[in-house]
Image 1 (tube, rainbow, N blue to C red):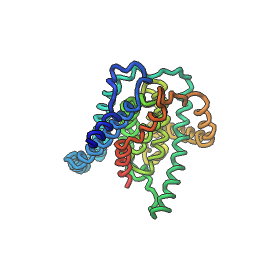
Image 2: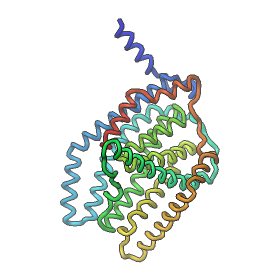
Image 3: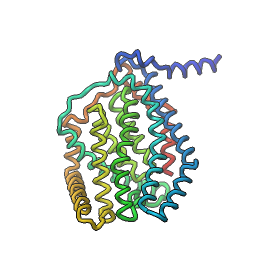
Image 4: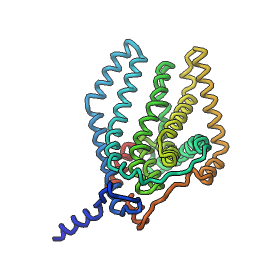
Length: 343
């Protein structure tokens, strides 16, 4: 009898409305939001299983074989095929899992609020992306220092240095994938599907939770804080414009400028036209970075006060209880599973 009562209580805590009959987000109960968090956590656990499965499947073996076969013929083709395989392995499971999640909760999209936006918001958020990214680099230093003190860990390796292309040809291929393919796929996954699923719980917690997952998805301490804080900027734009087009453009600009600035010497080909374009992009990247660095406090203050960061919080009754649903055990387990990749 007691076991039955426990099972009934668990069912009651996670029982969800028929979403197609919800007429207002205020109608959603804590149990509805708790089930949403449960679904997100379950999606993360399924994703972790799929990633292990794919990594142990023949896909990586095939990628390895093809790379070494074509590297004898053309390093550029080998690099391209390698990027195609790695992109597929990285993004395909996430697109699949989060699309299924989004398919369930998109029924509530017509209930989401709309916002009046200033045409200057995207410009402000461009500089905010770099400013928040710099804050992320400082957080990374703090994390590194804490790991050294607590666990005697070494220096956190710089991912961009580890993945630096060997020559200009492979560098240009890398640039296409990092500055075009990656932003489009990541915005679909984290801002369209994941954030779009989380928004019924309230814009603010949805932005923070989706950005946390975006940071954890990078799988290393070096990129975690940078990605999470940049993800907050992208998520705010996606919420306010109800579209991922502005975030895709901003994400492409961010990855392009950062990659060209970091890999500028490698990307130079000796061709005057291409090198001039690279130097021009590098100049823009350095200019934006310098402005963002010098004006960082003002940019953060502007984001806070100009209205772009003003979004709808948790709505309806039992707001605190709805907010506490993010501590759903399955969601915490899913986040912990993502964190385990860092080790």
